[in-house]
Amino acid sequence: MKLITKKIEKELTKYNLGSQENSGLDAKILVKFFNPCGRGTWLVTEAEKQENGDWLFFGFVNLHEAEYGYFLLSDLESVKLPFGLKIERDLYFENKTLRDIKF
Image (cartoon, rainbow, N blue to C red; front, side, top):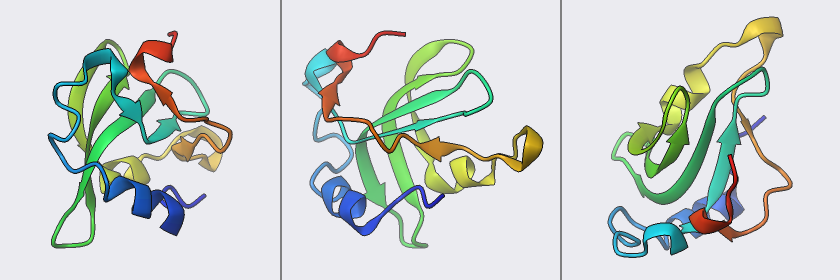
């Protein structure tokens, strides 16, 4: 599965790093990535394309603990899970804010 489409990339360019800094729980979630085999959710609220073509994301990450943080698209793409699976993008995720998410 391709984690970033042209449509998503266009949306990401509207929300550079720091653009939702003062939004708190009302920050718009741009894309949701998840581990299809278990725990692991990445909710992107800001992004910036790097010179090498990679994307640096900021958002809410729930792995062992839930916290805000930075992560790279290349890191998500490099994760190898059991049964040949990889990190996936939630195809049915609707535009929500962090306030709307229940873990």
